Image (tube, rainbow, N blue to C red; front, side):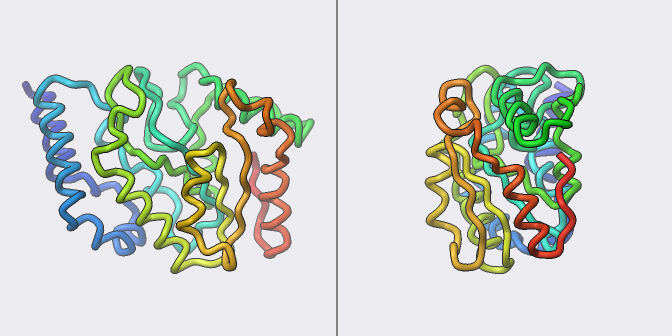
Length: 236
């Protein structure tokens, strides 16, 4: 009962507490819209019913707690969080320290190694290092029920993250949007391609990595674009 009450507090009272100030300002209108209140109500009812939801409430908005809006350079768009225990922590494709690398993340590391032969696969699959280098690791859906992939795909998160993409597109310039797979590519319509850079390829999933993810050279291309802009390159 205590645990449920604590979760209720985090979700219903303080869902946005960990968001960095510039993101709070940018997204303040979204937090007050009816669909967002419906998301909170849904999560509250699911937890009260004993459902296990990932990531933990304190990590739901983790992507927005590291990279201020005005320092943003890259957006890597995922679909929904990992649905296994201890995996999801609010950063797309990332897992918490000590967790086995999921297949898609292994393929991502393999592609980095193909592009940068000196790259060494890190022991941890936690991509916080990337988030601290101006990368927004954004899932389109921010929560999921344990062991049920895409279970929260229709609760309203798409409205929120579409708004995030649109606001970034409208208010920033020269952002590199990385769209892997058909789902991520469907978000291209939200981006002003005259102002921003789009990198597209198949998804790093084992089902599609050999169909064009391997060899896409996206990690080199990101650094080439940053170098041309006079920005520091990402240390993958």
